[in-house]
Amino acid sequence: MKKFILNLMMVAYCNATAFAQQKVMLSGVSNSFRIGDSIRYDLVDMEKLCIPENDESTWDFSNLKYLGKEREVSFYGKDSAKVRMIGQDEMLDFVQTTAGLYLSQIQTSLVKIDFVDTFEYLRYPFVANDSLVCNIKGHGTYSSKINFVLRGISNTKAIDIGKIILPDNKSLSNTLLIKRSVNGVIIPLNDSTEVMPNAEKMQLEVNSYDWYAQGYRYPVFKILLASLKNANREILQRKYACVANVECFEKLEDSENEKLRAGQQGKETQEPKTSSHITYHVTISGKQLHIAYSLSSDSQLRFVLSNTSGMLLKSFNQYQPAGEGYEQVIELGDLPRGEYVLYINVNDQKFSEKVSVE
Image 1 (cartoon, rainbow, N blue to C red):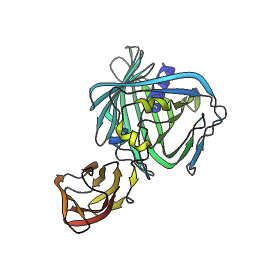
Image 2 (cartoon, one colour; image 1 turned 30 degrees about the vertical axis):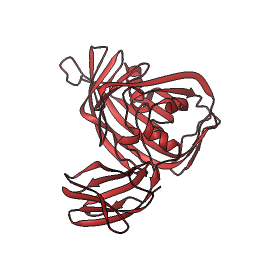
Image 3 (spheres, helix red, strand yellow; image 1 turned 45 degrees about the vertical axis):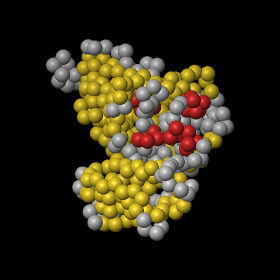
Image 4 (cartoon, helix red, strand yellow; image 1 turned 120 degrees about the vertical axis):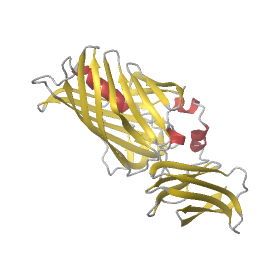
C-alpha cells in the first residue's frame, strides 16, 4: 500500500500546472487544460541532474540522456469546467475555473482519494514570485478495503523567469519555473473510519519542479522527488525527470500559443500596479488587450479605451465582488496601428496606461 500511495501522489504533482510572462504569466487563456489535448513526455537520466537553486535564471539540461521511455497525458471531459487527466497508470479529476485549477480526486487501479475541500492546485493569474499555500484533506481507500486519511499542506511558488536548455539542446527563453512542495501525513483507519489504535503514521514529502515556456500550454520539463518516511526512517524514495515532446505542442490547434511562439504576442505594457482597491497587470496578446486584476473590496469598474485625442473608442462597465483571478479582454483587431490610452476607474479611483497597437 505504501508504494502505491507514494506513486499516486507523485503522479498528481508531476502532471499538472501552467503559465505565461515577465513577459510570462500563468493564465487561463494560455495555460488551462483543454479537452482533447494529448502530450507525450520522454523520461531522461537523472544521474547528472542538478536540482535548481532559487537564484538561477538559466537551466541547462543539455547533458541529460534520453531513456527511451515515454509517458503520455491526455485530457477528457464534457466541458472545460470539469477535466479528467488520464496517464498510463492514473486518473485525476480537476475542477477548472477562470480563477484557477482544483484537484478533486485521484484514482489508480488500487488507490482512490477524494479531497474533502477541493485541493487548490493553481491560481490565475500567476506570475514570478507569486505563491499559493493550500491545506490538503483527503479520504482514501486502498484495494477498496483499507481506509486512510491524508492531511498535509502544499506550497506552490513561481520561482523565477529565465532560459531552459533541453536535452536535445533546444533552448526556450521566457520560461517560468514553478516549484510545489507538499508535506503530508497518511493515517490508516479501521472499518468504522476511526483512526486505528497504534496506527503507523507515514510522512509524505513531494517536491516537483515544472518549467512553463511562453507559447506552450503545458510544462516543457518536469522534475519530481518524492519520499515516504516512518519515524525518520525512509521507507520509499522515487524520483524522475521528463521532457515534453515539443512537436506535440506544435501540432495542437492552439492559436493563442501559436501566436506566442511566432513572437506575435505576449508584449508586456507595464509592471503590475497596486492601489487600495485593485492590483492589475496589462498585456497585449496578438490583437487583444488583457487586463488581469484582483480586488481587495467589492468594486464598480469601468474600462475605457480612447485615442490620444481623448475620443472614446471602447467602454466596459461591470460590478465585481472582492476576489482574485479576474480578467477583462478588449479586442484590438478593428483598430489601426498607433498609440492609445487605457483608463481604469475603480470606485472612483482612476488609472491610465499607454497602449501601442502594431
